[in-house]
Image (cartoon, rainbow, N blue to C red):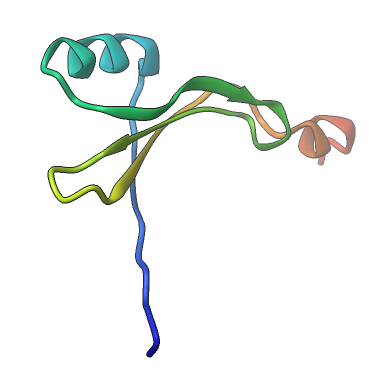
Length: 71
């Protein structure tokens, strides 16, 4: 038997605010907002009603690699 998975994600302008609003609506999160410095984002992951993961991110700054080598 083979399983396929798919993911969906959204980018928001204020992740902490979005996180608080969704928590207030009883959305279940499996990952609270965390910085991912190498990617230049803050990321949180919640579950849809069927238990599938949805990522929500905020662009915080350019990845460190881009900063180290400006064009």
